[in-house]
Length: 123
Image 1 (tube, helix red, strand yellow):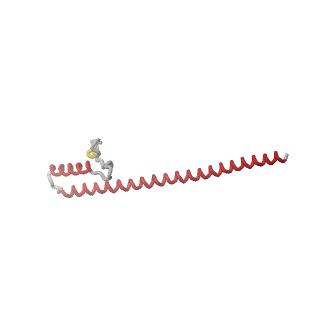
Image 2: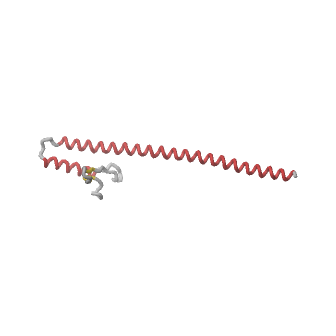
Image 3: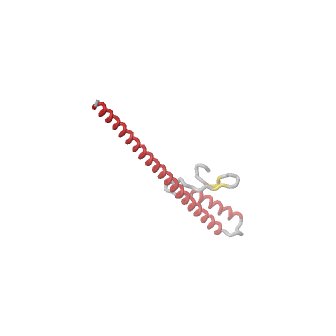
């Protein structure tokens, strides 16, 4: 009888330890997973914020160039000069890239949905 009680106690202890280890492991895993999800969200938010800031800076740079080119020609200039300046601006925008892989570009379209400047493979 004594051995049955000892054996029962040992089995109960083993099951209890296994359950405790499983529970603690599950809680640790869940906590790690929540931290992982939070970190992913922070990285995504940070990356999007940085990309938006970079795009905004590049668009502002392009707008400054357009403003410079517009001020370069006088308001009373003939239409041919204005078209030439417009063509120069579009050509500059067509080739303007701001990253080392040359894959970030500025596109320009008119109100009819026609793309005037953008990636060469599209235009």
